[in-house]
Length: 209
Image (tube, rainbow, N blue to C red; front, side):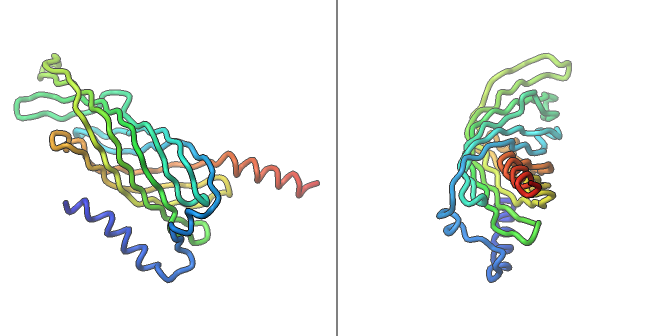
């Protein structure tokens, strides 16, 4: 419960501390801005059953004013992950697959630096196997998972069409028998906007004529 309150509290504090700044964007005003289709990758590093791994994501959605995005996606771990061993010496290997709905809001921008809130909820299955100490499969099944991820992300504009992105957050997983799949996530990567790239290249050609 402490973790559940921790990240939203940080986000609220940051919004409050910048509340009188012209660099903070209102989500209600953003909804009135121009809409466009967005798509991309949403990969995040995490740990599952003591195993450092990656949850891979692919999404599409609608962007308002290039700041507020509502997304639908498919997420998962294509390969089995996990090093978890219970009191009986049973190793549990998991493979996650879930659909998701989410939002990202670029609420703060100062020159090339930006801050984004991240919230995503999904539903799917954990396809798992249990192995004994000799590596022999003793059980195989699937269980419902309802993951909820919340976090705070940061960006830096390297070029008009290229951003450096990083961030952190926490994943909560329901129901109770899936809580062990929860944990932190971190993001680090580059974001490339093909539309802006083409527009920039066209502008450069026009300028050099």
